[in-house]
Image (cartoon, rainbow, N blue to C red; front, side, top):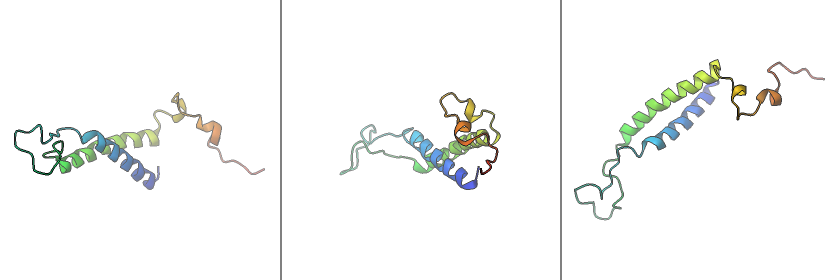
Amino acid sequence: MTWTAGIAIYLVVWWTILFLVLPFGVRSQHEETTPSVEGTDPGAPVAPMLVRKALVTTVIAALVWLLVAYIYIYQPISFDSIPFMPKLHDWYGDGQPQTAS
């Protein structure tokens, strides 16, 4: 895996995990006992805790990325053994260099 592919995969995993983490622990203004701020939506969060969620997302994304990188680099599960994946060796050959005819 090249370093650019590793960064790209990490960013995709990070944003996916962020959208999974965002709803946890959010309380809207209408759920709180304090009066809501004038001019804001009652469903707006009181304390979204975005820095904490970004840190949690970073840790979880790093663990998921390590798992993906391990599977990609060491291939304990080959991509050709996954039932729904296309058979890549049929499309690209068996990995041996092709000679020009």
